[in-house]
View 1 (cartoon, rainbow, N blue to C red):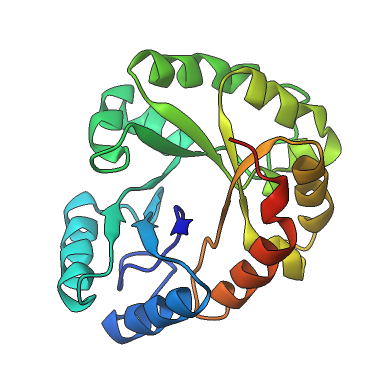
View 2 (tube, rainbow, N blue to C red):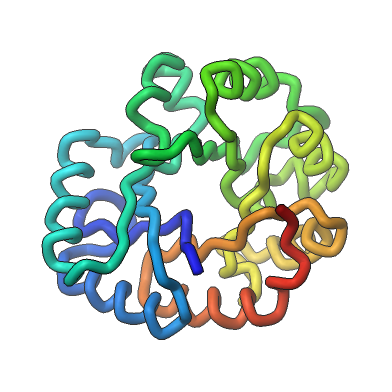
Length: 214
C-alpha cells in the first residue's frame, strides 16, 4: 500500500523536525500497513529549498533500512507560476510522470478556470496531475461540483486522511466523504506531518478504501 503524499523528510518544512521523528513516522507508516512512501515536501514559501530537500531525502533513505522511498514535491500552484512551468521537469515524482499539485486553499472562486491552462500544460508535458487534498479548498466546500470539474480536466484527486478526524481546518470531513461516495477520489494519502497522522490513515483507509477509483 502506497502513501503518495507526506511530510516525512527531516527538517525541511512543517513536517518531521529531525531524523528521529522521520524514523518514528516511518515506523508508524509500516504499522498502518504502508509498504512504500512518496516523500512530498512543500514547494511553497517559506519552505522551498530544492537542494536541501533532496539532501534530506538521501539522509532518510540511508536510514530507512531499504524501505521503498520515492522523492516528489507537493507543488503549490502560485509557487509553480513564480518558478515557471519548466520547473515541472524537476518537481514531478522521481522516476514517474506523476505531479502533485496544490491549489489555493482559501480561494472562493466559483470556477477553476484559472488553473485549467496550467493543468493542461502539465498534461501536455506528459504529466499525470494529482490534485492534493481537494477537500480543504474553500471553493469545493462551497461548490462540490468543482471536484467533478477537476476530474473532467483529467486530474486525479487525492484526499488527505486526517479528514477522518475533522481535518486540518475543521471542515474537510463532509466534502471528502461526498467526493469518495461520488466516485471521484483515486487516492487516499496520509499527508502526514506527525506520527498520529498515520493512525488517521489506517482508520480512513479501512473505512473508505472500497470507494477509491482507478
